[in-house]
Every structure is written in structure tokens, then in C-alpha cells.
Length: 289
Image (cartoon, rainbow, N blue to C red):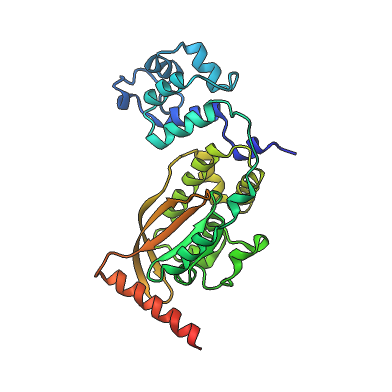
């Protein structure tokens, strides 16, 4: 059986190669001299920019050395022009995990206060997710927005609990909601890669990544790119089958129990807010039948 780390693919050397190949010499103030067999910087150029020996950097990239000091990793991050999220991910996978622990059952449970909070957000589509993006609870509007074709009580049962990333790739009803699914899919994978840096030893996360890799060629291709981003806020454009075009802002908030509150709302007094209110009206009419 393959190890969790092999499935999650948080190998330092592989990540360094991917990042090096995307950086053009001119981005870092270097002249592109001579022919280049591969795109991006050469190893010796990264080593020089980072202030480390070429031999040492090569050992890191070839996975002959599994870890490096934070100071060296930060220097390499600057040499590769990494974003803050990519730099943090490099630090996570490039340093040893102290006393790795399996995921705690508490991370999949909700406090009564959190459940009450989600239920009280009537005009906002809200859900609570664990770090694997399993949906632990959703309010009626979130359910109506994303997954009216599923039972409302699906998050209550671990064996049937929806996973938002899995639905985005494997559920045609959810996939068709996004006006720009290509951007949404890339955002999903970059976030999952970011999470993988924090939870390299989680077998359930490895199972999720393995299942998506097998069942979706699109996911597998995006996962191999090793792009990283922590997507905590932004705007998404939906093409909803009930209310049509719907532009919503989303935000994420960390909860004390280790889970994540995700909520979607429209700009006040906009056509999108009116459309969201129509969805709420449709929700009420369904409940009155």
C-alpha cells in the first residue's frame, strides 16, 4: 500500500522543480543566455539567487535531502519569486513534522453554538466545512444554492457527507452552477494543495486526493501542477437553474472547533441580492408545499 505522503504528493524536490520551471530568467533580472533545454531557471541560477551552493540545491531538488532550515527555504522562496501562500507551503513541506498526529474526531464535529449560528443566517448562504472540505452543516439557503438535488440532512451522516471539492469535479449538477468552471476548478485544487501542506499524514485526505485523481483527469492534471493558494475570500459568478446569473462574494472564517465557516452573500441593493432573495422566496415556497 502506498504511503499517505506519496498520494498527497508533498515532496519537496518535486515542488522545487515545478516552481523553478515556471520562473523566467528576466523575471529575476537575469539574461537568458544560450539555449535552454527546459523552461524556467537553471538550478545553478536558483542556487546563486538563494545564496546556497549548487550541489546543495541539487540535492534538495533531487530529494536526496528531504528537509532544509527555514532560513534556506526562505532564501529559495525569494529566488523562485513565490507568493506568500506558496512560501508558507514550502516551509511546511520542507521542514520535518514534529510528532505527526492523525486527524482528530473533534474536527468533524460541531458545537451547538456553531449549529445555531449557521441556522440563524437566513439571508446568507452558509456552511461549516472541515479542512478536507467535507460539509458538516449547511443552512437552507446554502443547500438550495449548491445542492438542492441532495437530501438536506446529508451532512449529518458521515458516510453520505458531501465534499464540496468532490462535488465540483464529479457532480454535474454542482459543476454546471459555475459560469467559469475552469477558474473554479483551479481554485479548488490550489486550496487543496495548500491544505495538504498542513495535513501530510491524514489518510482521509489522501483517500480524497486519490479518488479525485482516479475519477477526474482534469483534477489529476491540475494536481500535478502543484500550484498553491489559500482561497479565503473572493467573488464567484453562478448560473443557477432557478434564478439565473448570480454574482456572490464569499468569505471563510476559522472556528474555535477547528472547522471553517463559509458564507456567500450579494452586494447590497444589487440585482444579485434581488436574485438571492428570489432564491430564498423559492425556498420558502418549497417548504410550504
